[in-house]
Image 1 (spheres, rainbow, N blue to C red):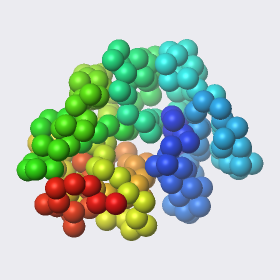
Image 2 (image 1 turned 90 degrees about the horizontal axis):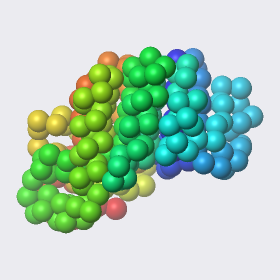
Image 3 (image 1 turned 90 degrees about the vertical axis):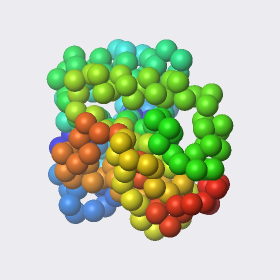
Length: 216
């Protein structure tokens, strides 16, 4: 499999990259890592399974060049742009080069699916970028691509992988989760691209259910 990770220097992206390069079950995965200033990941360039690219997500040409020849695209950043250029560029590039499978990072609260006091607080926190995030999700749903929207919880750096997955039609379970857990969800899709296909999923630590504020 050829996997393109865009915004490849993000914390979750780095966890995904590390696991792919160090776990035997991903030994057949070839990584293309797209980011501005790719020298930041220069240490990975010594691995024969890694190709670094300077990619500007605001440039259709730059994104298209990165997408060509890939099997799966993971966008490891949330599109908060008012014009959703990032999402449109990824969709356009994938349609142009007949690449079908995409995983796109987003926020929780897209559908008023977060219950209780935490849901009220979360809405206040995300309101400024909510419309753009909702449009990004809708653009993917309408694109004809096989997509997964990842509605991330409030993140922490706890080492454990522990999460409950919920779909867009279900109340969000939990308020916080580890970056390790989100990376694990991404890797489940890499291992089985049918997992969470054409769905928008949340993933959070169920032990944080009922909390009013994020758990760090």
